[in-house]
Image (cartoon, rainbow, N blue to C red; front, side, top):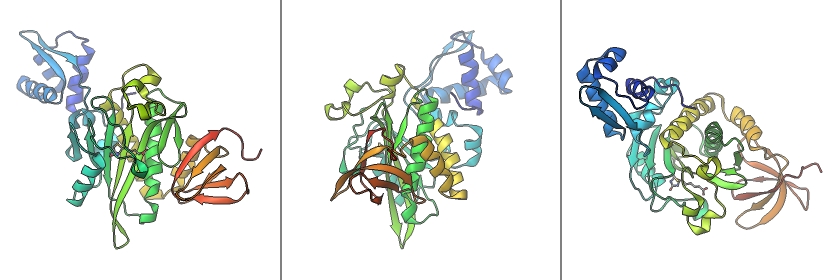
Length: 343
Ligand code: BTN
């Protein structure tokens, strides 16, 4: 499950965790990493600052007692794979972690207006006014879930920005699957579902000037280690959480790093080859084609069968009553059952 971990600090953590609670001397670690004992001590100190609980036992060495659960820039960077590290899109210097924010999307927007680079990541352990789509609130309790926003500066036309929501959903579904919840489904345009209930949501916002994208903020909220009972009563009935599904805790920093690793691959693919490869994989993963759906638009709502995703990322549906095909540009789509379009 863990991506390839090569930076020196990761090697130190690996040496300590392989010792399974037994002390490892600074001399031994120094020899393994070809650094001095003083340098070992410095690295231990920096890991402690990132939340690793490492004890020093006099004349015996260092013991790893616990790895941090609250994600930090360093804890996430330690879990990035070699390809991500050498790409430069997501690097530790561009990670901003906060104990609490009103909304990571708001903060990311402010940072982007101040010039923050493509690949900046804003993470909060808690949000006081987490934003959902269509003016909804995203319940964001502290210490348990992931709330983060990516700042992107893609050279694409503004009308294609919604494709980034689909790309994000795809990368996120792959991560959720790789952490053991392989029944995860993607629901157009911005939800991940487990057992038909909402596990994660994506809120994409952008700033455009003279028909050019200045920046896009892709905000992601995932119910990770929260118990359903601890979510707000108005969402606990319609939400899913990894904790409830897997019956075990997920390390949030590893989950976020895994997502960034996968997102980077799709994002580069998208910038080089366009939406077509995303569309194909998205369709396979979402299994939406043929499903009966309820479409809720601002001024209209109807039942239909999902037919396809068009080349721009909009959903094509066939209205149940009239048989007429229509393109859903914005709105809410609820999956009703698994009947086939052709039946
Ligand atoms: C939705 O499904 O309605 C979208 C939910 C998006 C929630 C995330 S949490 C991190 C980021 N910051 C916000 O304020 N919202 C998004």
